[in-house]
Image (cartoon, rainbow, N blue to C red):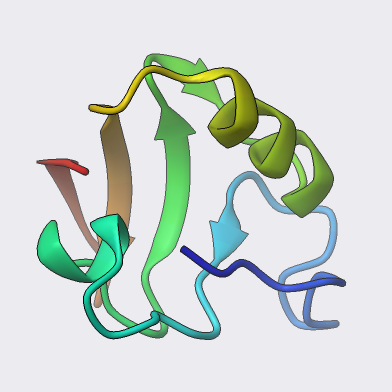
Length: 79
């Protein structure tokens, strides 16, 4: 699972984190997450920054649920 080190300028200040890279074989890839998805929540907690998301991933159990926006449409997936 890879998230941006910095928010892209077009999305800075907006909720969520834009996925800029998905590592093949990672939990994110296996869950169907794609580059360009906007990750809005992780295990029920709103995502406000890439650093906050990294902390949440570090302390989460092996399975997680995420809410993403893909092409303007909300989706929920398990990672």
